[in-house]
Image (tube, rainbow, N blue to C red; front, side, top):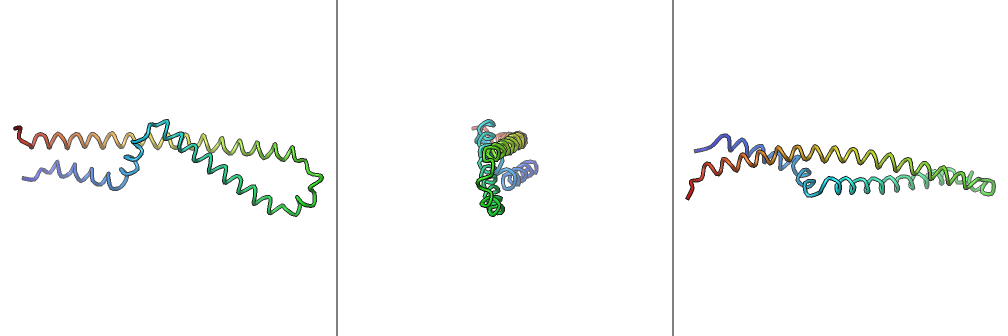
Length: 133
């Protein structure tokens, strides 16, 4: 005879595993600190490449002015300003990604705990159905 509770549980579990659960199950292999550090490192590297790309584009755009005034420019002030802006950009990206990925990890854990509760209920149903030998 069909057990409707078991069928409902199996359907919920299958839908979760096929859609949102893939990412959550992948995240469950990490500790929170390791996952957040890895994502922050990726964000800082991405921000660095983006910042360098923007600098190259600005240099190309202003190259005529830079070439004309190469002798009279204050390179120390320019370098200090560029370094300051870089530190601010990396700090903002780093803090933002740390908060964002920490929240994502916590939400994933909550969904996984619900998933494991459903798995335990399904396991209990299987144990109740099978006769003891």
